Image (cartoon, rainbow, N blue to C red; front, top):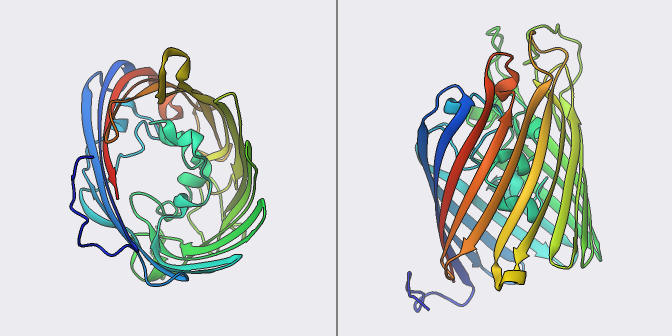
Length: 353
C-alpha cells in the first residue's frame, strides 16, 4: 500500500480520507458554445469517535467556479462537481450521537449524504442522477447540499430492514441567520427546510419514500401571485440488484407555483465488467427528464431531458478514470437552443485510512 498520508500517529478511533476529482468536457454539438471546460473538486475529511456513542464528522471541500453548464445552457447540471464559487467550504462539521436504534446529528451537514440518494446512481457524472432535480433546485438558494450545505439537525430510527429519518435544515443556505430577503425587499423571512424519508432495504432491494417542504418560501414563479401555500414535494426511488446488475429509478414532484421544474423522472442500469475480467470496473446508462411547470414564463419546451452513458476504469486502489458521453435535450427548456452532445473524462484519486 502506498503511504499517501502517514497514519501511524493517529488513534485507532480516527478515520481520514481524501479525494480529488477532475472533470474535462468538450461540447461537440448543440448547446450555446461548442467549447471545452475543466473543473475540479477536492475533499479532505476526518472522523473521530470519542466513544461508541459520540462521533465527530468533519470534511472540507475545495472547489473552483468553472462551468460546463454555461456551454450547454442546461439547468440540471452536466457535472455534479460544478460549483458557483471557488474556495474552501465546510462540507461537514457535525456531532452525532447514536445508540442501538437511534441516531441524532447536529451541525453543518449536506443532507444529500443521507436523503434522496442511491449508491448505484452515484456512479454518474450528471447531477440529475444524484438528488432529484425538482428537490435539488428548490428554495431561494437550493436545499442544504453541495456546494453550500446548511446547519442541520437530523434524527434517525433504525429497526431491522426499516429506517425512518427526519431533518431540519437551513432553508436558505448561504444567507445569514437562516433567512433570505425577498425580491420585493420585504423584511427577511426565516426559512427552514424539513425533510422526511422512509427506507426499506434488504440484500438486493432498496426503496426510498421522501417528503420535503419549506416553512416560508415567498419566491413564487413570476406568473403566480401569493396563494398562502408552502413549497413542498415528494419522491419515490428504488434500486434492485441481480447478477451484478442494478436497476434504479426515481419519480418525484414539487409545488408548481414555486418550482421551474415541478415533475422529475429517471431510470438507469449499472453493473460491473466481470464478464471481461474487469470486476472492479463499473458501467452505467441512465435517462432523466425534468418537466417544466405550467406556471413558468412561456414560451418554453415541455422540459429538459438527459441521457448519460459512462464506464469507470479502476486503474488501481487509488485512481479511476471515467469516460462518459451525455446528451442534453432542450437545454434549459429553451426552444431556441439545440440539443447538446458532450464528451467527458473524469479522473478520481481517493484515499481512505
